[in-house]
Length: 223
Image (cartoon, rainbow, N blue to C red; front, side, top):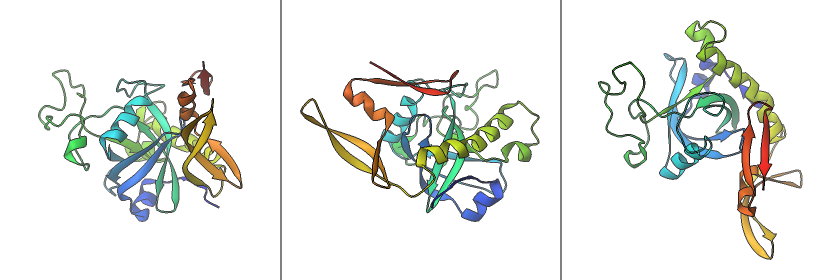
């Protein structure tokens, strides 16, 4: 059985994440290929979306506008790396300079260390995002309720959400076709113990709108 777990920074270092991995947004089921790494000297991981298509997915899950404001801009996720499912939190505002991904995927390639913030000290839209661990707040010695505390708590909450999403066990993710109004529609499905689970976001292919109600913490499907 593959269980979703929230790891500490040191446990992430021991796992040796460096390079490509898949980040699953637990509110939509969207899978985004990312590239990044973990450092024993830092309290979170910087990453970039792997391709321009992955950048577009990242922007889509927040409604088309980059943000790290709650509720849409900070999100629970699962990092799929090797044979591990790791509960994390992440934000959706690319900032600062490039860290790892190919040049053709950089959101804003012209920033430098000298220009990454405006005159008021605010981050300009840049090139990388951040992943947070369950002990980010402890490593930062952050008080309760601040940014890092909220992100650490969200990483812990992602354990429950992740195990619900993945069914707490082995699964296969692939594509299949559904016959809808006599037309074949390709969807992403999770196949577990003989049962098909279709990704909510793919309901948009059937003319439905999928969103998330942050207040009620429920996905919303509308005609």
